[in-house]
Image 1 (cartoon, rainbow, N blue to C red):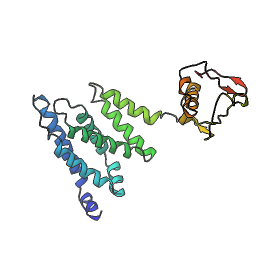
Image 2: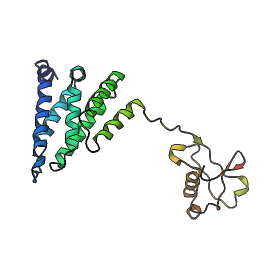
Image 3: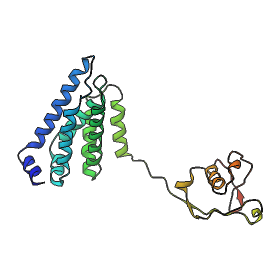
Image 4: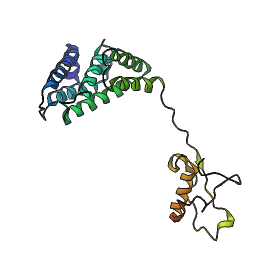
Length: 222
């Protein structure tokens, strides 16, 4: 860790990012060539692995976030690598995934981090207007500004009616059942009951079993 801090103290972080940008530009310049080397992206992957190693140090991680334009530059590099067609290889795909993982971790640690990432995305929208890139950037912005709410989990107690003892063998022994394991509709609840009580023949038969809630029959599509 001390060696990594020494490198960064000497200004290595911007230099490394500049080398990454130069390598991405070199790969992009070969998009006009009809052939592709399967080793394309090996140098870039090595540079990104070095960056990832540096960012594991908390102090260097903070310096990266606070250094102007570094995040925006690396996002720009990611978008270029992701949009490769002719020079697209397994290695370049790995590089894109590595960069995406870096962005996800850097932008999720605090509100200030999210704000910086949003600014980088807005800046990128001004230059990346082709293909699906704008949609990707808007999706990233939406996930931060309007995050999806987690579905609430409800616990259901599944009990057999006393009048059905002769017709339905066994019991639902793992009460209560979280809704996250049962599914979305009451039809999913019925399927769970049929599978656990060895009545698979009734799964597709909507009239073969009735479900009651507080003594009232409920529709299976609820």
